[in-house]
Image 1 (cartoon, rainbow, N blue to C red):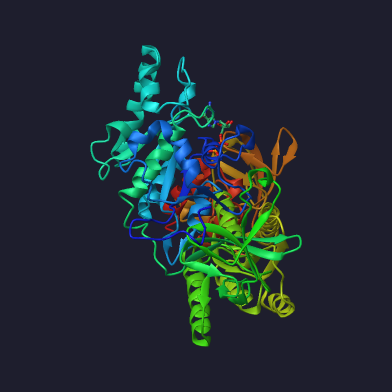
Image 2 (image 1 turned 30 degrees about the vertical axis):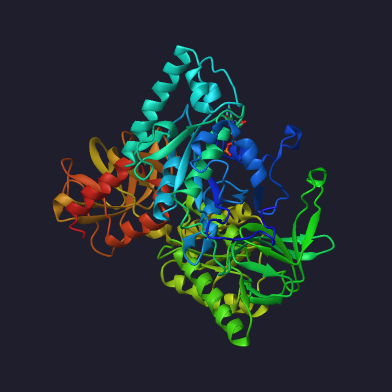
Length: 607
Ligand code: GDP
């Protein structure tokens, strides 16, 4: 096993690299991972030992076996310097981002999966940005080659010769797809080349054609991982005694209580060590009671058996059983302390890292406040809010305290709806509850992020409805009316006449004025009729009869004296009425209505 404590570390030995898989949805990330880890026990091949610990240790003998057809790719033949691979079980960028260790990524080498049929897609490009940003080297798997016309599979050979042996029309199809993908990468500013044609691995990213489904090219891919690790990454992977470990998962296990699965990158962990990990309610200090690694006996592979160790050394994934781990947080480092001073120091360090992580989320000036139980769920929640276009102004981990309510309450200045806490899978402290009531902060609590989003959307709609009722009398909808002179039924208070709606729309209550006659007020529309039927609203193009009732104490204006058939009537808008429409009645206006508002703004000189 790669975490064998007896392994002698010399200058020549490196630690196992941590491998992540990224790419667009459906490109084949999960299938590639399954293949790399060989979780399919029925394949009857030597493989990694998978027990869902967040990562899988793939031992050296598996690598030796699986790269035998591609040995020429490894420059130090028969002399492997790395003891194995540590493969992160969950694909995608959420997990990649979660694997932080003091700012940098824990992932040493990534596999970027590209579907050869689809080329670069939205999430491929996002993944590239992320990898470049974190300076993480990567190898490209050009996956699903078995879908090329007439592909003949052979997973026993290096994929270079498998390609050579294809019929010419299959090769043509490959070339066509490949050329297109090279251009797509170039548009992202990256040089890429097939791994066996790569003129300079420092300048060109290597591409390995693969089929995760048939297994073609997977040996070549693993060989490229080994070669890159032993050459370009050798310095980075040299083993050090300084502890570098990250909590991957927190899990309750029958008979063991709450345990943490830890990716141990560098250094050693021993039973009895005093450890410090991040917790929902602050750092947790505890002592390692048991160190467990998956049982190496293959028959037991799927039965959740663990082997007890006194000591383990990086790189590997190990399960730690200890007291007080119930509230520990995944995604943060683990430290060992030997003295009291060290305990305080590392507690501070964890707090600092958590704050840095929380501050790294891109938050908005106005928006809801999010509280979740783990870093991972917080990230997933933020992702969902982004999709739903709900902005977020603040985040925290753990139970909702008074200070969270205080932070959320600052949003009352922006908009009452943002003074809302969405609490996912966390408790709300009693005093926080009371304080929220006093301050007017709304708290929604649920253990489903989707439910929380719908609860917020419903609340938002309810607020809009309330405001519409409250402000409807102040909302002025835009209209431009032409008087129909043959239909004047009453010329003064109330004015009753026929009009054609030239633009916009009228509603009962719309105030009407005559801009061409110094903007004189005529009053408000009291009723609308079309073919003797009363209407509440009439839109552009219709001809209707309206009754305008004067609303001031001044002498009522008269058709034929104060204005006549050549004057265009318009709704009397103001800065206030525009703001109210923008805030609460947006949905009732069409695009042409907004254009009319802009026109009216100019006529009425509204800034
Ligand atoms: P992910 O979303 O990137 O994790 O993609 P999956 O691994 O779940 O694969 C998506 C679909 O593509 C599944 O139906 C897979 O069986 C299929 N798939 C994955 N790799 C290959 C491949 O190499 N060839 C073919 N033909 N299908 C594949």
